[in-house]
Length: 235
Image (cartoon, rainbow, N blue to C red; front, side, top):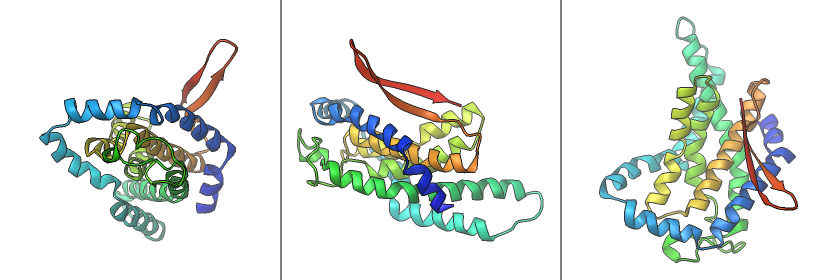
């Protein structure tokens, strides 16, 4: 299953989608846009109450917590059998843990590579810290945004109920938001981390469910008069 997940994730389709995401993030990271958003949020939005809530949300993206928990739960699910009326609930929970752990596994190498290659720094280093400077600083993609999003996106992709999808997708942004609030990442870095998590989860969902839709897809729009980015969401 892990091998299939790697093949599904490391494909031309994933590369195209993440390439478009990089094209969207590039002007945010390499202009004053990142710093302007950072200044507005830190001066006009951040508060003591939000700091308290953020400290709880940060745990969601902590790799020392999420990796061993999800992977151990997923492996346990594969070797344990539960009989009785709780079988369905156990299968749903175990399947969620297994899929989340596999999504972390397939996406993590891309996260590390992207962090190092793009090479941008943290907000407290100054107004130009978001600029991409290859191999300079390993913070260009938020690890907390990636790790914290995976369990929620997995849950969202496992349900057909729109209100649950909305709830889970909203929850998938909490880990990344906490890093913006705590002045630890720029918004471009958080967006890249979240979208990498989405692509990782999508690769696993396609293996588990042959009828799983293409989901959220980014594509370039180019013609003689304009250029930009299009977005499609397919059920």
